Length: 412
Image 1 (cartoon, helix red, strand yellow):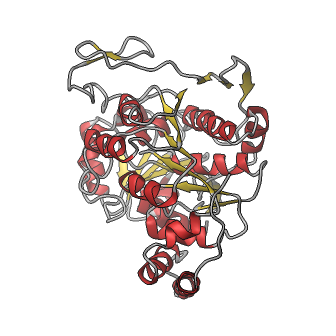
Image 2 (image 1 turned 135 degrees about the vertical axis):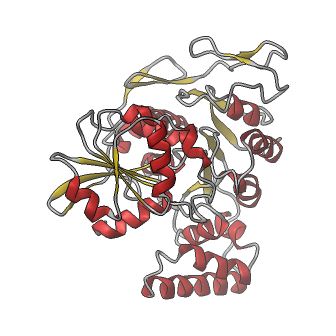
């Protein structure tokens, strides 16, 4: 159960009030939800506010390179079967955004919090979580975040000796190595489609052997742990060997994997897999992701892909050719300013699709598609791309700020 429930101090109350006021001003000025600026103001007035706001909650942290926003939402839905939940559902996942989210959860029992990979150890220190879900680690924003093995080491050191139950993906060697410093780990076989960041052993640097779904290091013996939960097709297998059907409105294998990890988290708090998975069906979209919208009398499905692993998963769930595809890439601060990652994405998987390219870095993407031997059209904006797209639903794939630009354009 959650611990200390003493009331907030006058200073903390003032910080919360000031943060909410700053957020309201930001929203009124049309500058987004205001959660980040509100949190910054609040933390300036009370640097310990995050810990104070978390003290009455059973906190669950979720971190990964891909899938953390969706998994946070699925866990939150599952845990509502056991009590009220507060969550940073819009994805503001650094300390300021998390503080803003928790400021609205005075009556909640659970705090389900998405955390940026870089800030996981610090947020865990401040909030004393009861559970931490670790889904995957792959290259992303290398101009801002550390290289993947360095990030795994940061996690490993930060979580060493943690009293939290760690729910970790047994199929990702980097996650396994990071989680292995903790005494209480629940292993989930959630799969790993993108393996290009996990060919060297994080423990000794040797070459990983990867026969089938298994993996091990031939030099130091570091190997895949035996999972107690597993994704098996359209089912989640629990530690007792029972198979529970996954019924999601969200598409793709990756979201089934997110559901498997979410069911394992929910079980830590006494929510049975059947109940947890039934509640997850209610999730239709996550912060605009997977939404189908109408724009200029055309149907568009909005998909977010921020890095090579995310693009690989997204390609697996779009409709087959000749479905038109719009690709949009920016390189602003929130995306990472380095676009070299485009060369790690196998864009040949889009062969046969009519492709339309836009965004701040459309020419970078155009060069990549040209080298891949694909036919495409560079467009100035979404309106032009939709105008030239052949009939049928259009799949729109964009990285983070490009996705937000598109959502604003279509009024989503």
